[in-house]
Image (cartoon, rainbow, N blue to C red; front, side, top):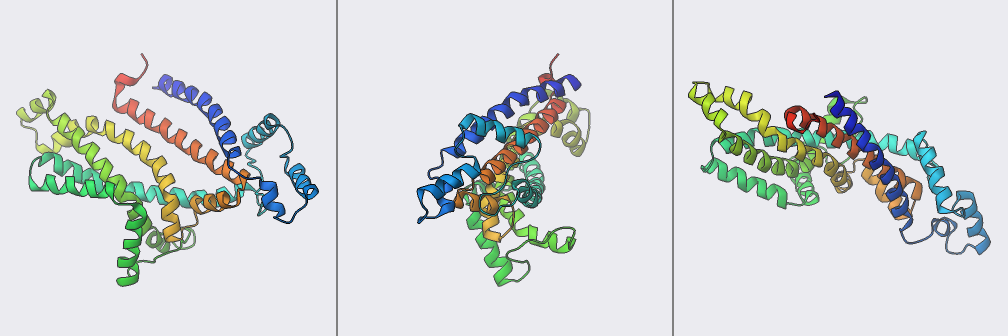
Length: 314
């Protein structure tokens, strides 16, 4: 297992190098000149040139890239062109909020998907299975932002059970932190639960047809023991892959959900940066998001290797 871990870590290094090239290059393709935007429409050519020199935009792209990469390796992602605030500080304030939201949504997804998939697979072809299949199809089809607006209308404005917008840090008030996360987590988690249910249901049905499961049942083992001990470990392999993809999708999907519920996460910072063409902030957010995705994929590979020893190097 240690060799498997080392190989996976080594394979991420060229990926990270490629990511830095892509992040730096794609942001430069955004139309417009940040120096012109900062200077304003009435600025002179000399004023724009002075701002470009101050920001280092007059240097060659290779020099700009090298300075950015070396600074990023030391934790310095630059300074915002508009707020003059350190990009690492802005991301550091917003990232825990987005991670908390994504983690809560992932928990909601698992709580809904696992029991639903097990019951649906064990009751294959019954009305329970049909209802679960229909529910998963609806969960995938419904847009998250629309579902969030419905939740706000029903649970906040009509019933008054939960707050409609805002966020409270866990250290300030744990109870308020939970209540403010419920609706956005449900909004994000339902779509993930729908996809996880479909994947896990199909995997469980396939494992139930294996010979070793029939042998376990023939020996008189109870259904719960057969499912818990023999079925779930092998059936969870596709689910782990789906969850790994969902983590990165949750961070991306949180952009719209954070806007709906007024959650001060990476989504709001990203939208403000794109609107003002704040290149250092955009580059920092994309780089951090990619790093989170790479780490999540690494963890998924490790769990996958534990569940399926066949993928480990010999």
